[in-house]
Length: 121
Image 1 (cartoon, rainbow, N blue to C red):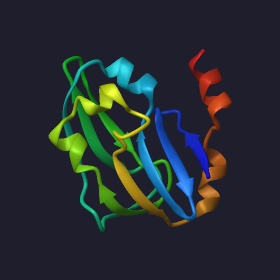
Image 2: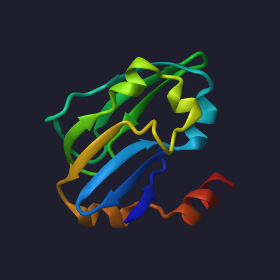
Image 3: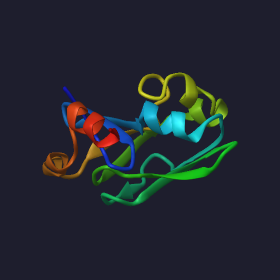
Image 4: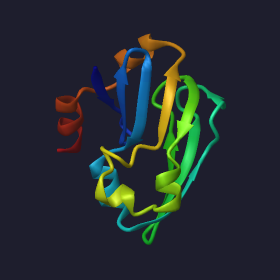
């Protein structure tokens, strides 16, 4: 079980070849009050770096990018129905997707928590 981070402020929590993906607390803080979330459907395949959805706040709109390649197993309908969950628990219950990994070697290019925190400084 491990959690990785991207330069675009997404996190991916991996366990047994399956993963949850979301945005970091830093990203949620920068966005401000989230008012709209658009997510792709389960079953969609994607490559690392592809756009996976859009998050809109009172300040701005921001795309969510795939930290790795894979397939969407489940989109979190709770954040679509209640976008403000991303402000409350962005690295907890407000995950965006559950995915299956296409190539776990892509994780090596991502940051661990210490590296991510250093990138914010």
